[in-house]
Image (cartoon, rainbow, N blue to C red; front, side):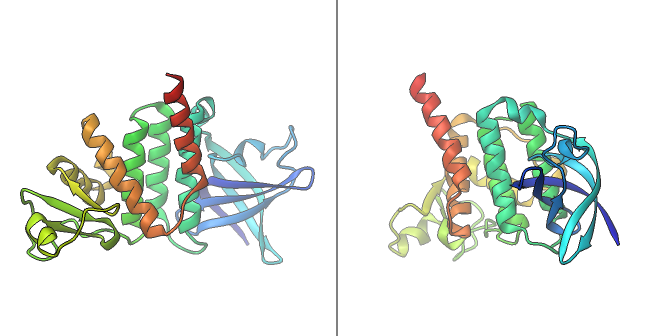
Length: 258
């Protein structure tokens, strides 16, 4: 039986001299590993579709408990990502997160939409890297069922007090009264939020996908937002990502040069 789906290549592994295994993210089947014969040949028909970040129409079949590619039709390559090392590294971080969290047989429609839209914005330079990183991290966690409780204080349900703390490790908010009242100490996972950042987090997590990228935020608020979203995703996925470390190293090196 042939299976035809739209898919985004999120990982590739070369096998032998000419063959390749690719992992594609699909809306219907989650992440699917596909064997591709002759993918590395310069004249191979599937070459353009089986590279990292390629979005294409894939037709494949199952043989001996593995999927093998029959044909493919390219749709989008996100070529501009390959022209900028920082963008390429950040895109690699996005797909590494997706590969780690999405399994085979799992519906991934919203995750795929989020990833495709984020890669489009990044590739075309429509939003800043910091903006896209924060939006992707927080919305991704919401889409996979790790939405934090951001409506109000966990203890008194206050929607907005003079001080609001995001307890990242506990996935909840505490107002100043209940934060200090319980003798919590401000630490790595307890971050005091400004009203702007609190409203932005709520917007990212709860707004319709079509409106997700339609907001602006100042530089200072963006720095705090980036701190919060990165801490949140790393804390709740309980691991680090080499692609994130690489991206941050590139940013640091460029800052040192300047």
